[in-house]
Image (tube, rainbow, N blue to C red; front, side, top):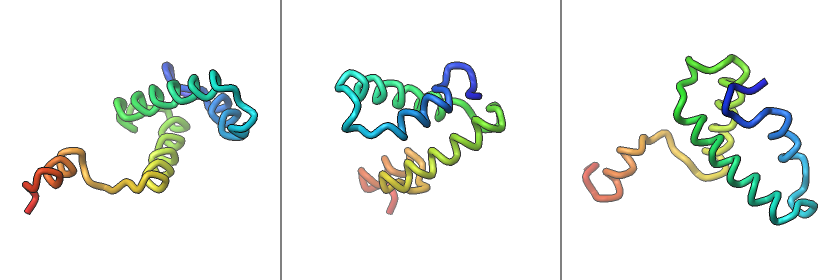
Length: 88
């Protein structure tokens, strides 16, 4: 079971298992919006304040996101400093 205000695990699993080719444009847009809000909620709450299941699921999702999008362990501030050349 997911924490309040978060996308339910079974819903997320169903969305992941359904091929995009069989989804309508409306379904794809809805999933994109709900995934974005779920990621925002995931980042706004510390793992310590989440249920065990939600914390484990979020850690797996963060790892997957970093792998899929080439993420690093840098903080947002470090990335901003690098972008303007202040981290030399």
